[in-house]
Length: 382
Image (cartoon, rainbow, N blue to C red):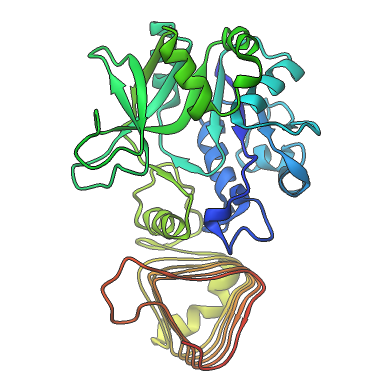
């Protein structure tokens, strides 16, 4: 039996501003599906049936509970009948992820292995192998670790100090280049044994954050903590740049567990309601779809539009002679005629008025343009 899941979703998401000004970070869209829903789908499709959201504050809790409710729709879309209702942290002002973990374990009476995940991660993981590794080694905690390549910047992560048998001796937070003890980073994907309740009680008010307080306490006091190296995809969607990267990776097929419906052509997915509208223009060459393209339901796309390696959210209006490249247009957007968008994110319910230019057109840069939700960008904006 697979463990119950607690998702730590109490953060304010300031690094994802302006996309999180009106919604919690876990509910930001990733190709028309909330980030956290993509994560839960990976877990539910492999056997998890009980989900608890460790939410904090009215904005997080109410928005998340309105999105998932008791989870019936979520499980129904996956064809899963043998599930339990989604649960939510009661009105408790926790001091961090470890405090939320302690409270939820006590409140919901959890005395089994427990999977604790961060609500803003996208991960490909073989859950059975992960659970088997944990049960073979009998640690208090198993941490999913991701090995970064030699060219990837490791200085923004917690980097594991490991023994040869994958026992974790501690983490070095944000090490300077060249000083890191390994290339293995903390993915904030944890499997705890039920004995963690005793440790949390022992720590008392010192147990605030899992990464900052709980794990250092475990390693410093000799509790067994092991690392499990994951082979698949992982990304922490903490900034607009990383949301953009995750979108491009989902479109390219790099994310193995990502649910790609409504196949149209190789590497292209168009909802039937949209395809019925645009197919004549597509057949005549009046609309160009190039590379990896995903288009949601009930969209309107006019003549002269070129969409390349991009996602268009549902119920969006794309007027004539618009060019969209390497971008993410969220649902209910309106892109007026003669607009050029390159390497950008456009938030929900936003209007980009005619002859505007978005993004680093013609420039070799890692920066992306980000327009928040419910924005009106005036004509000829650059």
